[in-house]
Image 1: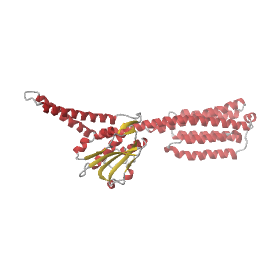
Image 2: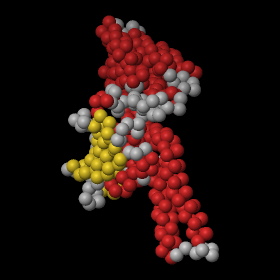
Image 3: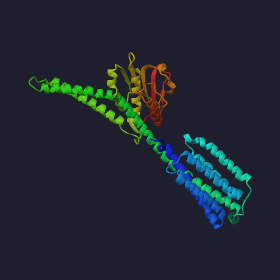
Image 4: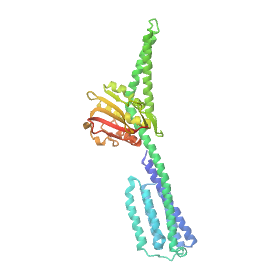
Length: 420
């Protein structure tokens, strides 16, 4: 996704456009007054700046808005109000439009990469306001519009138009803010899903091995059974044993495939539902059983005595658990007497998951940075540095917490999720 397509950029573009478009009815409102009062001098000034705004919108800002275009608009907008204030004096009600321009400034540059523009433009607007309101004379021309309408009414009209414009901007921004939030959530869902696919790719060879082993057993037992149907028939008990093992291996393959299917599917729109802890743990463990066995890693599992449910998006909590188990395996697979322990227990209204391994906390470089995006202790090509950061986002979104236990002698990651 390019920079111009990000939700942040889209919000800035929408805000910029609506800010520009508010200038058009504001200018037109005064042109009506000038036309009715035959104030052709002010009407000419206003039309000039109105055309300037339209030109800026259609030419300079087409087809997209950037920071420079928004800067140009704010300069032009301030100069327009100052020119009107210069001609009409303090009776123009320009102070209300300056207030609107300050609001527009914050709206147009409310993004982190552009907030450096806010302070200078606010100072610039206030400076022109002070000059226009306190250093210019009351009126430079004998204007029909001020004589007919009166200074007080003129200012009231200015206030009314400015207030309407600000109200319109705020209402519109509430809408585009909601749209931006939805886009951000969608993008976050894509990132989480992509990280799952990366992890799945890293596990691909091991998962293939886990499926291949039971398939080999099924193939071998089936061949022996077929041969046993010939002249030297197998006895009933032996054949029953072989077929039972075939069924068992088939069920194991089914569990692995089902776990992979659950783990890999998209879930951005999934509701938070009560899910059994045993089911999530089972889906995670089945992906690692063969890996642990082939690497002589002892695996210990401790679950609550009775089935406990958590309120969650199942796939996301499975992703957190798989990530921690994968990290533990990667950290200790080349060490002596490796072991991993997964413990699940109830702690008040929460359910606590902890993944410990035979590594030592003191041996983790940059332990205080492990949840930072793109920070990884793995070798190049073995990790993206996003796993723990994404896991943290998932757990926090579920109303839980995740941390590296610095009180434990061994490496121990803990996360909590609310009970259902």
